[in-house]
Image (cartoon, rainbow, N blue to C red; front, top):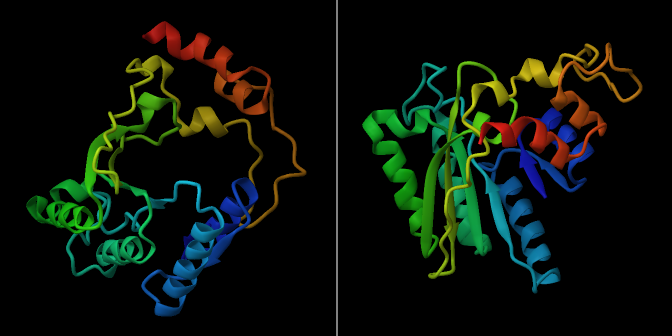
Amino acid sequence: MANDIEEKYLQTYSNNVHKEVLCGSISDNETFSKIADKISGFKKLYFDKQLWILGGPPCQGFSTAGNARTMDDPRNSLFMHYKSLLNEIKPNGFIFENVAGLLNMEKGKVFERVKEEFSSTMKTMNGWILNSEHYAIPHLPPRRKRVILVGSNDPLFSIEPPQKLTEDKESWVSVKDALSDLPPLQHGEDGSGKYYIHHPENDYQLFMRGNITPSEYYERNIKPSL
């Protein structure tokens, strides 16, 4: 299931990933209890499956694009509710993501606090700083790095950082590359009945339309840069 305080983001998730969503702040006791109860139910139902928690607090307070980069910003303390959920659910592991601004907030003290709090819930933890453009993920300039933490309750768990697909700028995908063939929409407008505004302008758009396979996209755009 997915949780967010913004209904529009959950609608996108519901349309593209899974229908099980819950709108509300994890800092609200009622919302927190509903999330915990729902996931606990999944844990019992799928007892033979791994259970992982994926997510992270909003990045506005941590981002270098913002001005309020202290713990006085209530958004910056939401990671403690994330930790509380880990303690309540006791999953097999978690994946935490946030902007790189988290690393130097209050001279690194906040990131050390985050790692310390999460480490108390898991037996092992790995972390990296990743660039989305290295993995053929559309991005907006300037380049934005992401902090990734992976925790596990398995004391023998170890994971290497994902191998970069490419460091060649020619193969990087911008948001313009990804979206320039899509029709403009008003806020909340359903675009499912609309047509593309022009023919595909690049291989990424061909890939998204299903005109070429993932392996064909890789052979054309990623492999030559390796």
